[in-house]
Image (cartoon, rainbow over all chains, first blue to last red; front, side):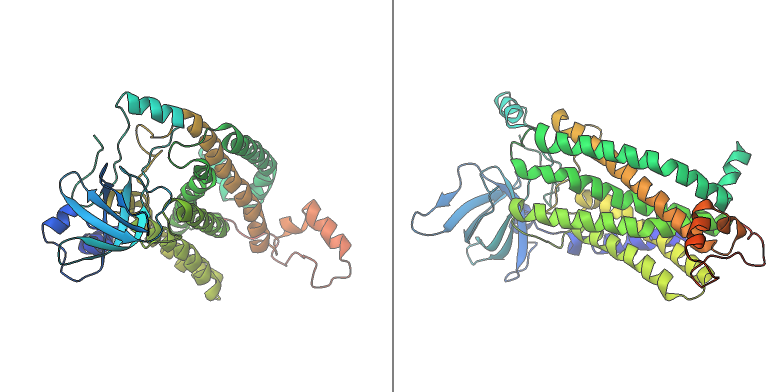
Length: 144
Length: 269
């Protein structure tokens, strides 16, 4: 009975892998794995120095990367406090005709590292900041 | 050794043993939780990324670990009950279910409270959150199934099968953050080199063991009540000092009093 249940679950999990995956990576989008006009979630890291804000409204544009490919995201709304360059985020929305991802919701995906600010500072200086094993879709991301 | 183990099939022995053990387990729980909460809320440093908000980890992570641990206790007890027909193992599973459901509920609620300020949402249907919610439904299903079947033996057996089948969800919860892309972070402490600074990990260990002892304490208390309910007609129950005192308080053979049946002692195990 246990073997049967285990097998059934394994097959179920395998079959629905696509549906259980919360978000697609920039590489998935560049590879054309997402159908035009569908709403979906994209996940990745905000590229350093790519965030463009406007002074008169909440419009924001930034590049999202999985360290293989990059997609530009535009958004108008409140961002989570953790949003910053180099931060992992997950956004809901759809692609426009130019291949830009127009987001209706942006969520922050923090990593699994916990440390005091001084330790983080020291590790950053030494260039030894730990990466994340977070699954960003196409490949596992490790921060350089 | 085997003879010593065998005594755990005897309801009077387990009732007395758990009664003697419970205060120690409860005391250890209070000490561990006291130290853990103090260290976690006042001594541990703030997090470089999440500031003070990360401190909910000291309730969220122990609750989530226990939600799965209690399920395994419930499932293994159910298996022991089905294989060796040990009624006390079923009593353990029955006693564990509401405790596990409470831990699961606590993990979901604290996770939600953590998710809003950090992620920006109370809830998302990702692999981790959905499988943990399924765990809550498994606990509730187990309790509902027990309550729905009139005949105690059939109820116990059906519920035991459900508990064992539900075990497939446990590795799914644990590996959900590795198998699928999720909003929930990957594992921090259940890996070879935990990615949490020692100053933050120490209070977390106190809290995890505190929660473990909390489970132990509540389980022992609930198990004792469960044994009394199951053995209400046995003569050893009527001869317990606490029951005799209770019966003395409620005189005149009314329905409240616990009375021994004609069968002097029921068979245990």
